[in-house]
View: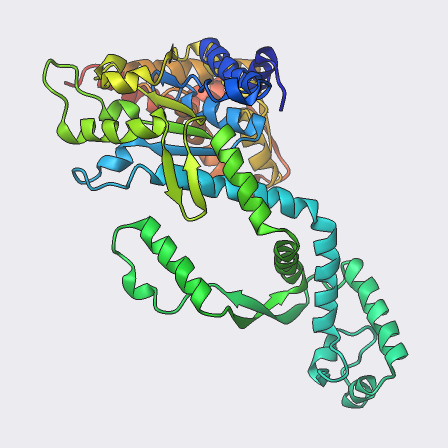
Amino acid sequence: MNLTPREIVRQLDRYIIGQDEAKRSVAIALRNRYRRSQLDDKLKEEITPKNIIMSGPTGVGKTEIARRLAKLVHAPFIKVEATRFTEVGYVGRDVESIIRDLVEASIRMVKNEKMAGVQGKASRAAEERILDVLLPSQKKMDPNSLELLPDSTGDDTEKTALVKQEPDSMQNTREKLRLRLRSGKLEDSVIEIEVDENRYPGVGVLSGMGNEDMMIQIQDAFGNIFPKQTRKKKVTVRDARRIFEQEEAQKIIDMDEVIDEALTLAEQDGIVFLDEIDKVAGSGMGQSPDVSREGVQRDILPIVEGTTVMTKYGPVKTDYMLFIAAGAFHVSKVSDLIPELQGRFPIRVELKSLTEDNFRQILTQPENAIIKQQIALMKTEGVDLDFTDDAIDEIARMSYLINQSEENIGARRLHTVMEKLLEEISFHAEDLCGQTITVDRAFVQQNLTDMIRKTDLHKYIL
């Protein structure tokens, strides 16, 4: 997608409040990708993405910026925690699994696109398969399968007569059944279909070995050796249509083409978000970094710097992937990372703590604003919520105060406050059906008194 940096920032503003500096940085990095794609091949190879490292308190939008950015440009995206590679000392996952996961995400994305493109053909094929189940051919027809036929009374004589119908009459019956199917009259009817059995024999005994990638490869190998097995399953016509459409779409698309396109997309447009990068940095207290932490940094370094990772789909180069690292950096600093890793993240952005005004904006402005979410949730129970402006101001004020006096968890504090505020309404929603409840400043103060009192007490507890 060809978006200017200004347009990218404008799109991010729809979901993320504040953090203008971080938005500008990622927008420029993204635009540079487009600029690189316009160059000739010789110069294009020399230009690598300028990776970004974001520091700031939890809950201020670091992950959300990266995730929304990937959705905006329709790029393969993977989020991993750096701490995953140091669990129980240093026996965590292999860092190359990051790239394998990104490739899998890219394949899923391209596959879904291709399947959406053949949805019409898949729907027609699925309809025919459902009709085959409802009305088998004369050779396969069983009187029990005629229960869903139009105008069928269930009488054995009629069923036997239908079995002996001439081909023209069978075709007419099929068309009548098709009309009923398309009108939705059979959606809740239960039919028996055959589905693929995904479990491979003999693999279960190997589980628990601790290497997920090895297990996946072993399963794939067994899947190729043993023929696919099917099993009968009773489902509604609605569910059968969904299953058949998926199966038919997979038959139509060319998986070799999907894999080739997905690998190129991952290499050229993939975005890797390395969260909790500060947890593998040194303490900055004048002592040498922990061995396992520095080991993780050195393992991550080749991937960020540019290397080739072997996957089950073939080799994948990481040279042109965009890496965005993030961390709170409360104890350590960015400068505590090993110099080689610092050098691979030339763009550094510091995200600011959220203000009371930011909280007020987060509650109402984004397209998925928290207030809108709560109103929609209660609407499903027939309860209308009406938030006044002074109530929103009070919620923002209390959330900001709690963050200041306790642990600062950023915008996540709003979820805690909103759940506490609407706890009674949510619990008794069925009794309030048809009512409109006004949430004003007095309502907020009354329901959040205990939360504020506990916060005040924490000031005096050592």
